Amino acid sequence: MKLAIRDACLKNAIDRVFDIAHNLGYRGVEMTLGGRSLREHPIWTRQGMTELRDFRNDSRIEIASLYLQRFQTFGFDDDKAIDGAQKLLNALIPRASVIEARCVFVAFRGKQAIETPKQKRQALAMLKEAAVIADAYRVTLCVGTTLSAKETLKLLDDVGSDYLKVDYDIADAVQRGENPAEALAELGGIVRQIRFRDMDAEGTIRPLGIGKIDFIPLMTYLEEAEYDGYAVIDAPPGDDPVASAAANLAFVQEQRLSV
Image 1 (cartoon, rainbow, N blue to C red):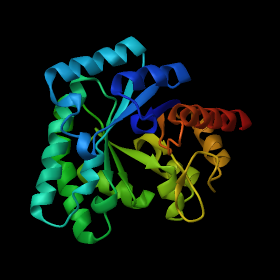
Image 2: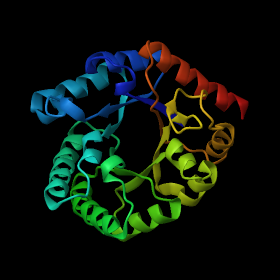
Image 3: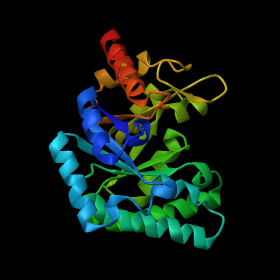
């Protein structure tokens, strides 16, 4: 298992994020595209993509994934919103190929959460269109949903693309009453990325080890399954983001040693 950190957890400029992650001992960085910073992100220009490749190469840190956070704010309310989300996803895939990102994280959460049969059909249509582009550029799309493992398997099977995998969020799983280790075993090889988040009894996301989630059974499963993908640490940065990132990394390493 390799550990990555989401750039938003470090609260630093993009070039500094890669160096900080490397110095702390992470193997990868997940870059977030969302909110007001979306249009200004360097990935939308040729020069910007060159800079991102340079940051990656100079720091010897992989781009574990691109988190299209803006995607989950569109919602399924109307055709215009769906079209906007689709265009954004479709445009990002070729750029992910250029910078050699390991995957694009497509989060069906927030307003874009899949809750009704109609929304499942809408999500299926969106993924089928994006999968055609992903296949052409050989870019993996990591889908994150609040669906059960069984429903997730059905969704991906209906799309039928080798470049469609799963980003499995531990906190979301526990929130819906799922046993993460058992669900990961059911999902098997379609899990490309795991998202390490912790939460308290009220469902608030907390630093790793501060919440209610028991990571030992999960770590035991990952070690026994010889999982060699990325686990992305996606935890609140706190008052000192770098210190928080170091503490979260130390927690995961301690849990692995306890197995």
